[in-house]
Image (tube, rainbow, N blue to C red; front, top):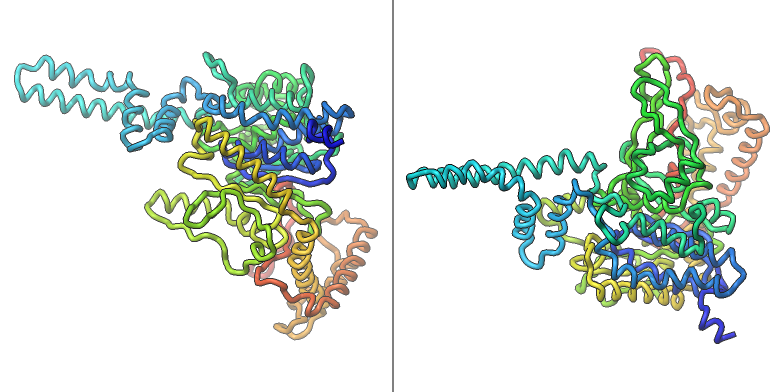
Length: 606
């Protein structure tokens, strides 16, 4: 048995877990070995991630699908074996994954020059700008050059040289301005679509992802792996995407069917294997109204959505990777034609990391029945860190009560803007990850931002290999350090006092019957007690709620209030100095708000 386990280490896991991976573009090279170390012990039920973490999630899901749907030990092992070999593939192909179009190549080359520069980035960018816009430089130089050459005086020659410099500078400014304000927006604010470009011999990252998912899953020649295929194998995959047009995130796969796509636009983003399937399973929308394109298709139900689409919609780093356009009806717009039918409005979906780069809340429950591990990414700072991979391995290391968030300097305008953006998108994930009941299940991999991960698109092979080994260390660290009972204990001492406090406050509001205004049991004048609200109040909205349903809500509320009545000290007393809230928050799965009920009559003088 030992020999079999050594030869087929992924065939027979003994435990169950969920897994979340943080986004980070090329930082994702750390995930394959981390996934595989965990897969030796754990079966993955739910797997999620954002941006590059979404790629890790779909690959882990594909490997788990192969393991779960096969009885042959060799076949059960094969998917994770392929994932384990990915760092070698990434080391060889990573620089070729990001392929700009002919139109966006000048800007891409300038950006790569800044990334690759060993010395002054300014000179590197300037020289590459001259190369990228050589035609414009020549056009701008011609008038001044002719004047300088044809002039018979020193003054005329100097004037020609001045005009040459002005012409070159003017054409460069124009070319850059046009590239940024016209070319980039016309490519949905991304230099790379993800597809293999003409003349390239290696696949673009979307082509590679789509093909690799099928290879890892052990499928070939048929339909692409879908969410429904995973569901049948009792596997869930989830990610986050950001709808910039609606100013909100969505959890993927979509919970509702309100979006459609255009064939002509999706063909620029997804390979034929995905497009042929989508066009076959998606319903075509009839063009209604003047000027409505004729190639609209409803996005298929989530069960029929290819897993590759999930990864691509979450991986759309602004400026580098083209955003994904979808359409939905905006019911707030007044129809402009006689059909009175709201027309589909274009929505740009960008990187999930904009709104939640480490969605540790996915798959979470108040009291977990299995662990949800998190693989986080952070910047390595030798002044603070003695280890590249960190996970609390003693009670004391995870018990720190003071604010352990590092204090980072804010210097210069660019640093100020970067700090604003980073704080806005990461603060919730950061604080959530530090809570007891969360922190001890998260392993952190620390990277040198100057040369590792992130936008370092052409990392050397030895760097990729080193980062993949950090991923392996992260996986083994989780296996050796994590205690599920200790995790459940810490979750209990965080969750239960917080729940007790919420129930206590609810009981006070539920039992309020109209004491003097300003006292603990007071209600606003004219307000009904919740007993009345739930039993006999006549509402203006949601009027179809059945009496049976209202009675069930009333009974539950009474029992919850009774629990709150008994939830006094010490149950409500916090065990730690950390603070947590139990509140109602909109889910990323929520759809656009339905039309409101008719408003009540205006108040006097209102």
